[in-house]
Image (cartoon, rainbow, N blue to C red; front, side):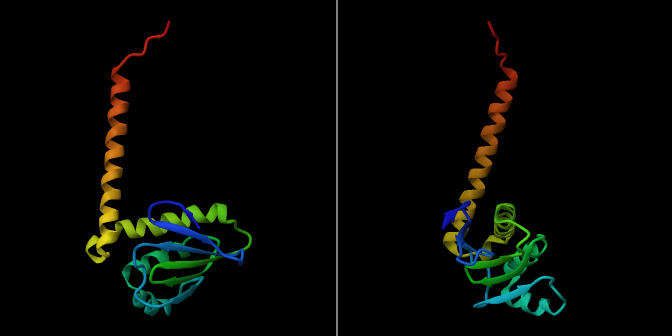
Length: 147
């Protein structure tokens, strides 16, 4: 398993077309649900069962070309890809969809430690942005003279 970012851990499976993505946030209310491409009107009933966070993630993943199936579990997702696509091109997009959905989800619906982790992550992102902006402004104001 490799840690891609602070919210999603990827597991490489023996089947080369399948990857598992583990999260610290509970992304599904159900034990397991399978969704196949394309999502249909009949999928709405099952999306409601997994809850708003899981439904948002499944919808986002199914918008990525190359994903054929998503199994969603309480703390993980199993994704199957079409063979014409590589994990190098899909994995970053998958992790982005999962992470954005979790970060944008109402914090009051996340577990206590997960909520604290996301709050710290949001705070740290703001600190890094502020520091970067400050350095950029200082560099613009300071003239660097050469020999």
